[in-house]
Each structure stands twice: as C-alpha cells, then as structure tokens.
Length: 137
Image (cartoon, rainbow, N blue to C red; front, side):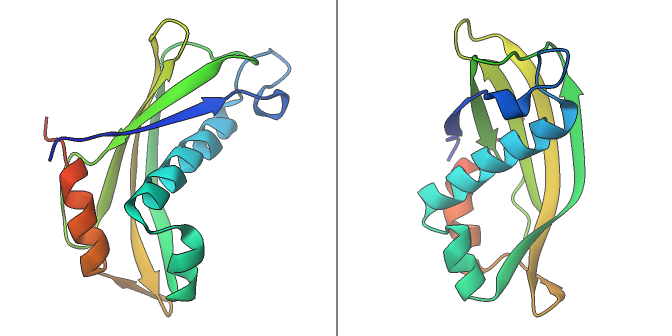
C-alpha cells in the first residue's frame, strides 16, 4: 500500500510546439506512456490485455499546466490511484522536471475496462495488483 509508479520520459522534438515547449495535446501522450509503463510493471502489458480481449477506455482527463516543459528536458511522472473502485480506474499523475524536481503539471485520468464492447469491472487480478498503489489523500 501507498506505493507510487515512477516513469522517466525524455522530451523529444516531436513533443514540442512552435513555442519550444511541450504541446498541450502531447501531455496526454506522455501521461499515457507513464500509465503503460505502470501496467507493464504490474505484469499487464497492453499486448497481454489485448490477447485477453480487454481494452482500457478513458472517460475523462483533467490536466493542470503549472509551468512549461521544454525540449531536451526529462520529466518524471509519478502515478498512483487515489481510490480503489471495482469498475472505475482513477489515475492521479504528477509531472516533475527531473533537473530540479519542480512540479510542472498534474492530471486526473478516469477510465475503465471494456471487453466485447461492454464496460466490465476491473478484472480481479488487475484489481488486486492495483491495491498496493492506492494512496489516499
């Protein structure tokens, strides 16, 4: 319990816009990469989920941009679950600049699982694995 995932992501040229900082839409991709890494750490890579006929859908994404992130920087994305529900996954994520640990952005991502086109409860093995990454406020 009370563990968090940590992913290091380098900011590449394709992440930035003409202003030289990460484009707002690219934050969603960077956050997705961190969530993908978290699922891999848990032993549930997307390839395996796909073989089981499972998909993850997102129903909501709330982002708060605090400071710009620039090309060439590295960010550390910290990910955890503020709640542990049977059918809804709530991912809390924070993006920090690695060079100085400054908080750059926060995100709350809400979604769940789909199988055969229908929303299903989080599969029991995944639900159990997520439990140790629940960090309540």
